[in-house]
Each structure stands twice: as C-alpha cells, then as structure tokens.
Length: 393
Image 1 (cartoon, helix red, strand yellow):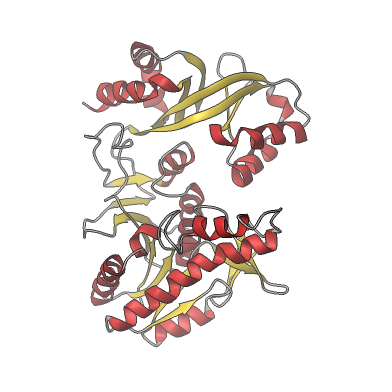
Image 2 (cartoon, one colour):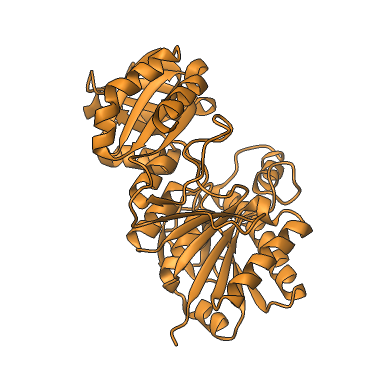
C-alpha cells in the first residue's frame, strides 16, 4: 500500500501557548489515525510583544543601535522558528507522538543564498523520509533554509512559513498541505469589513493567487503559486476547530466572482509604464511588496506600497531612474477577482457601486481575472460592502 503523506503548517498564534500547542497535537493525532504520515512546519510563537516572536527578537537586535548586518539579522530571525520547533516537538512527545525537530538546515532546505529574501532552489527529502518511515513526525522550522555552499542560513521573507510548508509538501509528494490559522477558511471578503461574508469551500489556484496578492492575508501568494506549480492542493483550516476549511486547487470557483480584496492604506503614484519593465515589477513585488497595475484610461502604471513604507517606494523609484512621479497620495486598492466574462459583464455596475458608496476614483485596472479600483481610503470599507451586497446578496 502506497504511503500517504500530509504536511501541516501552523502559524505563530497556533503554537503560542501550551493549550494551543496541545490543539496542534490533536490535529496531528487525527491525521495519523486517518492513515497519513505527517510532517509539520511551524512559525515563531506569537506576535510582537510575546517573548519569542520574531518581531520581539528583531527589536532586541535593533535596540542595541547602529546598522544591523544582514547575516546577524538572519541569525536572529531564524531563532524564533527554532524555539517554536523545539517546543512543538517536545509537546508531541509528551502527547505520545514520536517526533523530531529540524531546522531549515537539518531539513536540507536549500536556497539561492539571499540572506533575508531567499528563494527555495531544492529540498533534499531523504532525511525527512527516513523519519517518516520510522513513524516519527518531523517538525520543521518555517520560512528558512540554507545556502548549500557553507550552509549559511537564509530566510524566505516575512510570511514565508506558508511557502516553505507548501514547498515541503510538493517535495514529499504530499496528498495535500494544510495551512492552519485562526480562521476557518477563506472568506469571500474580509469578515472584519463584511461580518456576514461567507466562507468558500473551494477556490481555484488562479483566483486565490490574485486574492492573496491583492489583500487576502489568510495565505501567502507564493505559497499558492508553489502549490499550483507542484500540483499540490492547499487547504486553509482553523487550529481551533475541526472544520474542513477551504480547498485551493485545480477546481472551478464556487461563484463567477470568487472574492473581493482590499489593500489599504497604499501610498500610490502613477508613472509611465515603460519606465519599469515587467521583470523589475515582479522583483519589486517579490522583494519589497511594491504592487503595480496598469490604469485602463491612461495606460500609466499605478504603483503602490503600504503607506508606512513610503521611503521604500521612493528608493525603488529613484533606483529605476523615475523622476517626478505623479503622486496620488494614500489610496485604497479594491479588487474584484473571478471569471473574466463575469468581471467584464459587471464592469459598469461595479463602477456605479463604488461611486455610489461615495468613493473618489483615482484609477482603474482590468486584467485577466481581476478588476481593481484605486479609490480614496476613507470610503474603502463602504465600497467593499456595496460591492459585496450587490454581487452576493
């Protein structure tokens, strides 16, 4: 009988307390009872202010003053996941589940060597498979690996535990990867804006990738793309229940419009499209989380970054030789994602909904599978609610 492998990734809130780590152990136990060989990936415990959270550890480094060497930054960054891995492995053993904790180096996750924004090049799964064959649960640090020459640590950027979890699943030939978080799945839009927004049972890789890129924070876009390229389904589930979650895969979206997302507040500029070629745009998004899209009316490139990181946008523009960009100020990027025909048919109606909510339009971009409105941030929540009720009620 062929072995069935399941990779489960647990975020920082899922492993932050003894009670929550016990719930993680319950999920592992249930999966093993269902006949799966299980490997898990964990993030650092908690959030800024918690003693072993990544931001807390990095604040400790910065508090000493002076510029921080990228190698020192990376060593401090990986420490949080290593602590979480040791604690989670210990918890599993106390629950009667054989386990072994592994750093990114020990798990043989190899990267391109960039210290803080690395890309996974290869995963040698031989050691992981040995542990699985012995009936042990490998507990692997999320978001990190090593540059093969010298085995220097490399991190995959913020939020990258999702990506390393899915990459591990692809490498192991897992039946699926389950990403556990504090919500029970992917909602059509953020429930904090639309409390009645329903959860999706399924969504295609393509639609989920666009939703993740343009504001849905429940799963990282690179994780979705990794699963997509590796033909490995991803399921978003809650650590705190046994609800089935949302299946992301080679499926048909439940609705012609799959979801609504929001990026806000975004410091936004308009520049000539030719000034930033597509490869550089991709690099900006990957390394600096600088988003871009083309305005339908003017053909100019709309470029934006989280408003608290305006200096990073200015630096990128200067490096690209872009002088005197047209500044649109702080805006919100509201996107409707789904079937091309459905988006086209709704184009006028969606614009009426957004304007009917009192929003001032600064730009609009229509691409395959996505329609984005750049509007004033003050009216963004009302615009999301107006679109949601018009489309889904």
